[in-house]
Image (cartoon, rainbow, N blue to C red; front, side, top):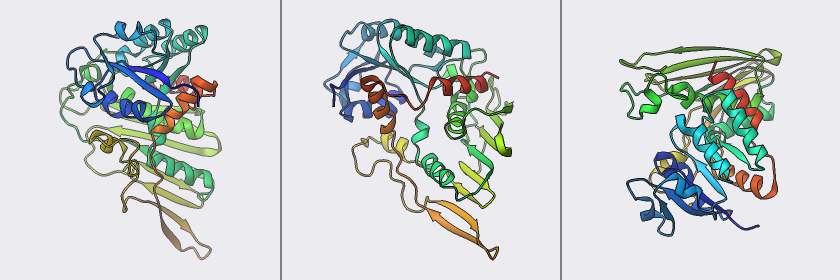
Length: 338
């Protein structure tokens, strides 16, 4: 293996604490050099050997740092990514990549012109449920697909404290850009760009300034319908993954354990990391030759966000193609900003 990639994080909020620092600090392909912490200096309690930068400029001026993770609020993604690229850094950028297709194109064009890699972090491709669903679809056991439904629902009636997500007019805010980026990426990862789509949004929480519900209907070749839905006032337990084909159906709840494990301090090196407990298996329902339905449990795949960091390493060190491509992000933004 080549030398580890010296890396810095732009922030140590929930994203930095859960989705980035544990991987950069344990993956042998990386060295965690430092994290920007303007006020609360808490990262060094867990990572005592790092630098706690006082500002983004301080991080960007560190000549040792090769890779910067842009995990600041979504309305600042465009500005901070452009700053990092012009400082000569490779960038791993949290979703949503930007507010508009034009901004995304400018970011990728800038990265290309500076001979730097811009990679967008779409970790839900490596959730246990998505990996299990992908395996069943690719196995062909469902026959020709008729409809695919992905959902990410919550019940959060109160307006959130993160104003950049909740304030009307703030770029890249609201539920569509937040959870919609995940759901759209899942559809694109499996099926590519849709032939056409419709989009419905609504506001149901008292005092909400931004949509807190959305539904996409994506049309693909061979009459495949893909439905993507999320709401913040959905109290019932809805399957996260529901696939119907001419030979059967597959149903799986969103029971990926990675976020909860990381939040409690488990490191990705723990053998239990990413392993769902028994009882969360998906259900595969097929129809036999006697027209009898056969239901069998499908063991969950191991969730593994480390795969995205391995991909970052190979992209930077070996010039490999990053799995979330520029084309994927361009298609995603078309749907987000519609």
